[in-house]
Image (cartoon, rainbow, N blue to C red; front, side, top):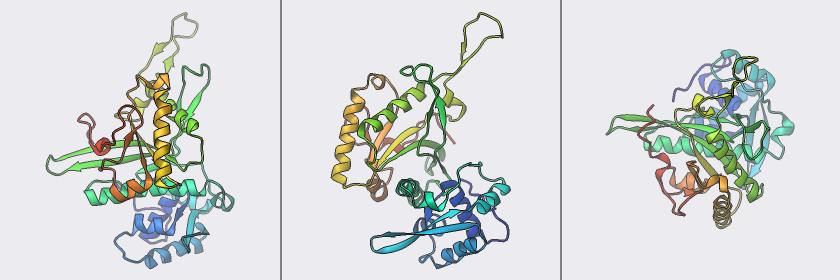
Amino acid sequence: MPYPHSGPTGLGQVAQQAAQVLYQHRLVSTRQLHRLITPHHTRSEYLRRQLHTLREAGLAETVGRRRSGQTDLLWWLTEKGATAVESAGLLPQRPYRMSPEAALGPLQDHTLATVETGLAMVEWARRLGHECGPLDWSPETAHHYRDEARPGEDLALIPDAVLNYVHTDAEQRTRTLLTYFVEVDRTQMTIARLAQKLHAYAAYRTYTPTQPGPRGARTPRRPHTEAWRSRYPAFPRLLIVLTGAAESRLDRRAADLRSLAASDPALQHTDLRAGITTLSKLQDLGPAAPIFLPALGPAEPCDAWLRPPAAVAA
């Protein structure tokens, strides 16, 4: 995917790239930035100097995070930094602004886990000869819909991320755009609530907005096509990525989610494609391996999540 190299003026290219990544993903650790932006450098000293340039210019701020006996800095953009990125006009504007309180708050681990999930896809794309870059996923993009089970309510489906991945096949000379809804679960919510998210995705999959007839006419509303078609060439596949506990506990959680999904009548005839895996499996084995347990249907892990459908070409 194209990666814009312009951003706040007066900075080196790496500092500009870091500012863009921080703007899009809100809170990112030094280690994550190193793997995203300068993976060709064995050590991260150069990146750290560029990041400190951002901080000295008042464009970025940090907070320390201690893990496994080591301290890693977490970076985010200040209001000045976000305004500088927006002025370049290269990224979709995001109203969210990080703060020291939010950076240290309860959503810290979830935000970093979402970055880690996107980072796993980026690193495997590099290994497999595919394309997925540091800006190829967007966190928390709202998708508005209505659900027959909740008549009269205007609802919003907000995936943790929407990720684009270009599968390239040099032998067949094809490039296929694959889009994924990503839900990262750190075992903080109940399994029933996680199952409700599956229901929401199935409802959005079939949601068709209606259009009123001419003013004053007693004509019924005319159906449009499904709402998602105005955004995506094909309905995105759903990846549910479990983390935050031992693998054995996460495997039980996946089984419980499948059981609840099987008991939801709204999911019995959906063509929603939803796969469950763990962050560790995604990192260690990659998305082309048989690591995804279907949320619906036979309980056999499969490797179809990077297999491009013939109809979706980039």
